[in-house]
Length: 149
Image (cartoon, rainbow, N blue to C red; front, side, top):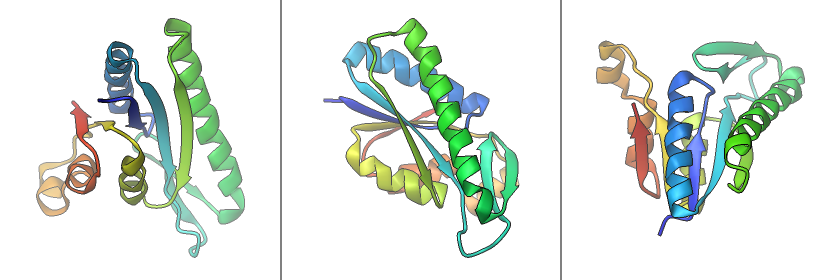
């Protein structure tokens, strides 16, 4: 039985489509949705990289991490408010983590029945040598994964 769905988002168009699919599914299954954004950090390295909006890298000094996290929390709150306008009875929860996105998403899957993620198209060369984020999550997740194209 699917009662808890995790939607990992980087706020890209693919992530928005994944959320739409998750909302439809959650409505049919009477399931809750947790929306996760992982702010990529390297606390030991000043000037680390995070991804806040799709493919746009955000460079920040560790002193500004709190601001990046607040922006991520606000972006998720905005997404939740938009969904709540259409589905006022749906349970939607925010979750912001810091670290390696793949590691944090996979770690979170142990607490959910299903993860829904968008597939991001990469160049064929990168896919051959590195694999896609969604592909790595599928291989490591502790629950079923639905990839939305």
